[in-house]
Length: 273
Length: 300
Image (cartoon, rainbow over all chains, first blue to last red; front, side, top):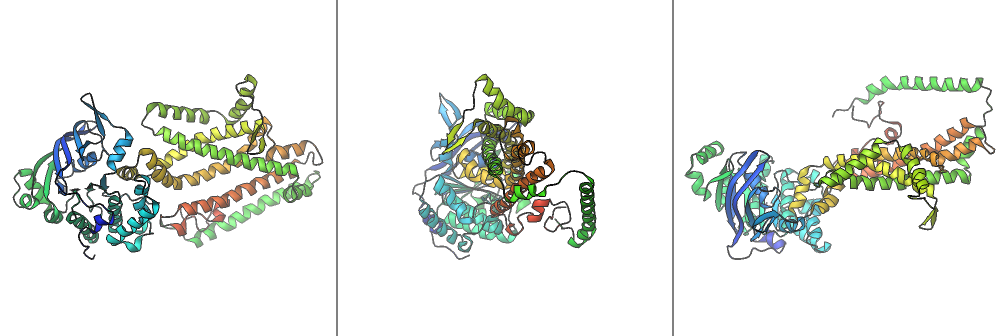
């Protein structure tokens, strides 16, 4: 892939990051259970604008669940999560948190991009239609504008030739790049990546990481659940190690990967590095 | 899935099938030849090629009642299916009760109850109505309501199965893009479910075309009633053999045309699956079933 100029991807949708380093995500004492299974046991995390946070940890540690709580795809049993200064999924009534109206939650989710492990492209829509669907339906963007923006986005993720192709005819790497473009088209202030390369054949991982690297350089705020340690070290501002439903260690990726403080971090890293 | 080699099945199944066919034809012809019944094959030919206005009215009624009832059924099916998977217990309960009632009682009872039962008590007397410039008799309205509501119960289960067959990741992706549940349902999930729903829906409509004949119970002059009446009075009185062969041919015409339309719909919906070239059984399988060793029925 050719190297895009700075701000190519975000500029394509008119979504240049604001200056300042205010808090985008503030999660406090987040608890989540599936029935009797206590998955998150008090997670605290703050993410600042333009920060790239990489969540690592063994499977079952709650990384993905926590990520899904950030845009309220999962309800939480205790604690609070604020995105852009607003409680997500809940509102406060007489000191208690009650589930917010669906419309409000949807509006908040529109500002949070999400990229899934299994892409989750809409199979009945072409690459372009996948991208313009939500901007037209949710943001009420005029269709002509949406199409133009989507075409630019597709070009900049290297898929100009695939505009009118259905997801089934795309490789995994191509699908994931469309999925990233789809998230970008909503001009999010934050993008959550849930193991974006885990379902890919090895030779396709690079093309997806390239796009993510580019996004990070352009100043997109990102939380990435990933086992790509090279990517984490190179692009991540902070690595966050989770185990058994809590964050056990966080710090600069370079530092953590070479000198982990916690034994469990050490054990985990020794298995995957 | 590997296909059965065409040659093998053909050689195995075909001569046997022909033999059985010839045998049945022979028995029928022999039966015809030995009976004293006065055949009037002109009745069949005329009924099909030179249909009287009465027959055409019957065809029109059968077709229009089927289409409208099926549309109502699909609509109720979508509402019922969404209701059955709702987060709200009362909504789920209402949808389940609806399905339970209409699947648990005979259609004939529903038809007669809705027309005679509601009529006699004055709950609703089914007056004739003028809808879009057409005068729709009360008994036709009652028939459509009964068939539509009955169909809706079956469509509820079909649509529900269709929705459940869609990966939950689709709903999540739609929600993560800021869509509400109902918008995601309408724009993302239901269009995909449609592909799963259409084949059984085709079956349902095929059935519907024939089930309209139950409206004989409330005297709707659709196709079956028309031929039945031609058998009991008029110039063709007591020619049930020819008359009901003619009726059967009309029903076959309707269901066959529908088979073609359904094939087109399925091909359209196959967009994006990467299987457009192999979107389903061909015309012959569609009309005669895919049980025998015909090419194109790859699932055995």
